Length: 252
View 1 (cartoon, rainbow, N blue to C red):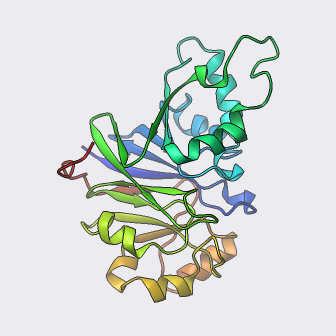
View 2 (view 1 turned 60 degrees about the horizontal axis):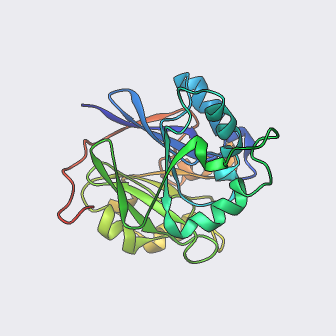
View 3 (view 1 turned 90 degrees about the vertical axis):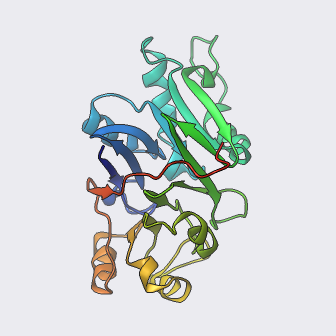
């Protein structure tokens, strides 16, 4: 069985040429789980796979990560074969914020009679979730305001931080078994995002050696990160993942 992490986009919110940061977890070359759905993500996903995603995990609800969910609603609702089938996983604490962002607009359809969430299969979680026989861990990150962003990990395979400051405490738990670590990083950090100096201060070299950096501010910023000795993810790139380990004791 082969596993890959397909980066649909790798840019910060303003870096439209790089695409909104989003990845697809692939198993044996087929999409298993989309992570985040920004303004251009659905187009990039359909261009790659031909159909909308069967499952989506939402890291947080800034619009560069969820704005595509309005279009996804219409795509699913008007296809009876897809309606109500796409799973949406997110930490339960995010649900009120996501509701306000994408689901509360009056009249999901102009014709009436439809609730936004009827187009999806909504599955809130806290510690993590089961999907297609695999346990995905969910963990808090440090982005913007405490309790509003959550990363994703598949034991032995990968960690995806989502937007965040450094989270060494999370990687010590979820990134200690050789996982590839997809980590937010720009050239210069700020109160919501990681910078190069933060990586060098917070993580040991053996940890940064397993990182693929994304959510950088421009192609030029990406080149700067590479010149500093770091690997970056490029839009459209697939990175091979280690095969996941069995779920840890107590998963679920």
